[in-house]
Length: 177
Image (cartoon, rainbow, N blue to C red; front, top):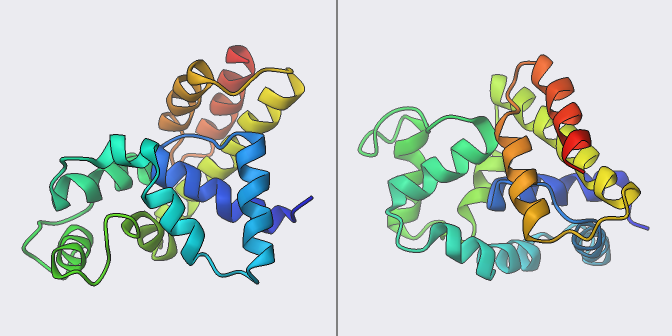
């Protein structure tokens, strides 16, 4: 079994890329891949960023829409600033995307890696609830299917930097599983 540290890295990717908790088999598979690659995320980022699920969520979106999709999944808000101001979060990531410095496949991981301020707490809270949700699906002997994906997204969407949303999110997960 992969370490919790590796599982947490992968769980954050599920939240950032797909806006939902990971399924147990997926989290374990990718966490093991991370450990096998000595912590090199490049192949995993590519797999997440080119997956059918991510493509369906991001296809046809402008750079601004894509960045805001990821910011909303991770932080429940749009990126700060404007697309033409490189000193802001939105401007920085849109500029990086438009210049080719990062790709649509790598933008979510770049946002996760650059998290700071209150957003660190939001991601930590979402990670806590995502791990709880994944464990609840396993302990409830459920198959992680389309219904659980929708329920997981709904649970994660309610989690913010506010500590109270962690308890609410876990209770919501328990009631859905």
